[in-house]
Figure 1: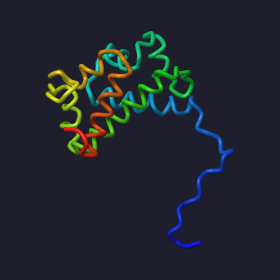
Figure 2: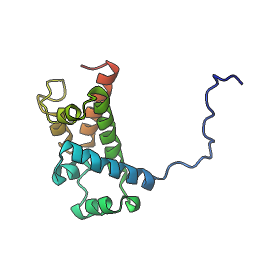
Figure 3: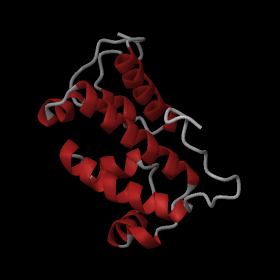
Figure 4: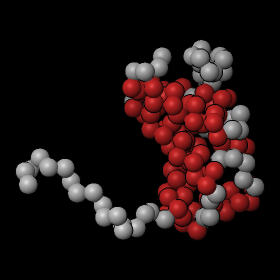
Length: 142
């Protein structure tokens, strides 16, 4: 085998990362992102799919014990993807964080900010913003 050979893929019987571990990591990251973005608790709840306040605060207090619904895991994935794309596109953290609240004339935003679109409450709105940013990163969307 040459030195340029691709690394071996994990064995088919390799254990997947448990959802609870993914949830804990996602919740910890989301807490930092929410702080950077200056999100209110109500905005955080809406972005995560409106879990009850008591549930949300229990997740924050004990993220390693959180039993997070699939919808919330999907939302966390989109939110982390959005944050990552912004960090790549706008390497200055203040600019990346501020972009979320600026009016956007691109198709699909209707002059609203990305945060306004994301706060509409539908997971599809988070998907839209993530796809938009992924497209901008790849040069496929302006």
